[in-house]
Image (tube, rainbow, N blue to C red; front, side):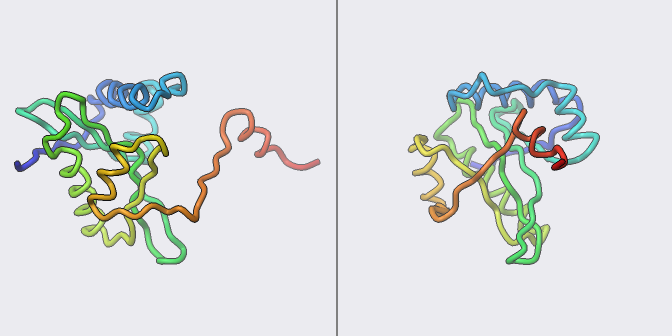
Length: 160
């Protein structure tokens, strides 16, 4: 199967949000989605902070990937962080997920990136098994930390 891809455009922001809501529902995190079309338009298409592409089946978008550049001080160059990859349930098992990761790897190699990275929820064994089958290695010695919302705002306040 040769997958077809299409880069997202500004006109796709509603579709991007739909895919985000689908992956959030799958991850049991729907209540955490606060993104809206205006915010996505600003950050993806105006500020160019992320990129999105779709995988197509018979011309219809059946999956998406949202990614952005990060930077490794150890490697001394940029990498790609895959924030979300999702294939609609009725199209899983057809090779679209692998095709999207292969496309991301091609983008990373073309841009001379040092790494392609992503995170996965600990309970998501089907995805973990899939990633391992591709040769991905879990970073078990690293724990990701996050500050958000009021905690982020409070951390940003100057010390008096």
